[in-house]
Amino acid sequence: MSFRLERLVYESTATGTTESILNLATILATSQRNNDRDGLTGALAAHRDRYIQVIEGPAQALDDLLRRLESDPRHRDIVLFGREPITVRLFSHWTMASAMITPTQGAALDSLVDHDDLTPERVIRILLDALNSAQFTEHREAVGKSG
Image 1: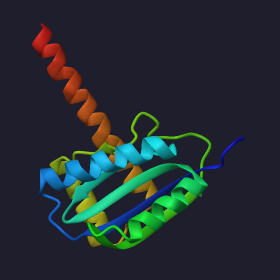
Image 2 (image 1 turned 120 degrees about the vertical axis):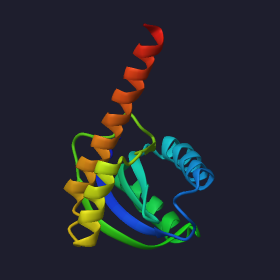
Image 3 (image 1 turned 180 degrees about the vertical axis):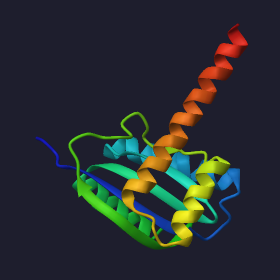
């Protein structure tokens, strides 16, 4: 049985602070467990008391996720930026990655959010850049420790 894959990009307003590492860790742990079960992959960024997420997987699993998100008390005001069919996952390595937003990426997100120019393509580019930067930093630190 084959599943039609889709990617969706959304943002929501946090009901608590996005500065809390405990809040983010709880959300990530729950997301990773549920996404692994449902065949979903993606990335989540917490920025300026907003959650910005890219999620990929079977269409039915995304529908189920959206229903759960609507009743999740940790956030409100979900805005869907885009949902489209895909043939290749861009976040296939992560059941739910936390994209650590650097000051440069934060400035780019600020600019997009402040000018209502937050498109799925721009969000995806910023989150992939954040994840790739984090992997490069982790690799560089590991090499430095071993050398």
